[in-house]
Image (cartoon, rainbow, N blue to C red; front, side, top):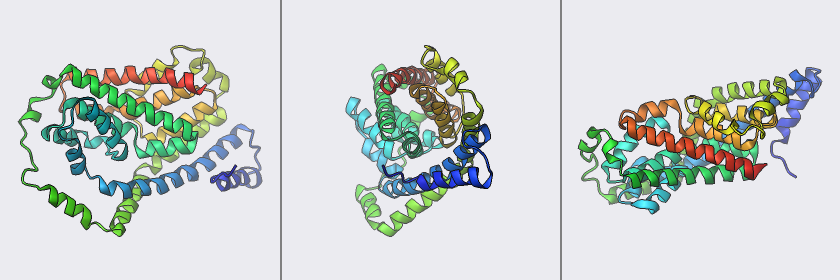
Length: 331
């Protein structure tokens, strides 16, 4: 079977065995091979796929996303919001202006939450790394359950009618885009040439790589250490399939943790290689991605503690449940 990353594997093997004179099965040799193989592989994936996604995103600017979701109600709105979130992965620092803008444009609270849950959790960096490290099946399961969680959680928030727990200043804001005609937005989109869209893709690819390459290298370095030096028995004993509390413990650990997804994913790869169940690892990954501390702090500016607690609670329970389901499906 064709392996597009075989040249990286071959080069890493040559460096470890021929240049450094180490055995691949040794602790140091295994760690170095893991590091030398994963760094170019992950960075190549980031460059190529983020360019493709960035080019596509030229069709979906934040203002157009807001207009797509405006007026959408109940379950259909949650589904559309989560699907749009997949292809418009704006960073968590955009949470507050997007949240305000969506509510200001008439997007229901629950629909807004479906978007805000899906966008950071099922973003292009997570998908790229999952596909490259664990394959298509795991990636599709992650996307499916991640989007499903965003839809279900947003729908529940909508049913509970929790608008009273949004900070009052949000409702007092006036629409900032009155007088902007839809025709103007369409003409702006049509004015972009394919060369300009490709340039946007190139710019986004370079920005993503520039912002995450250090996390990638550090994460792979930590993963390499785990791969080469942490005993398999240790991982299996405390986080293996025989520990029924492994999934909730992994999620609880991930909720307050702030780490870039590009830095976490290589660590999860090493944990899987050491025997940690895939569901436990992916639940941890989802918790780190969807419930990062900075995003919670930012959202606290527009949400009262009661609504923030509902958001965190729904996501935590959902991710724990998904972890157990993942383990059942992927064992």
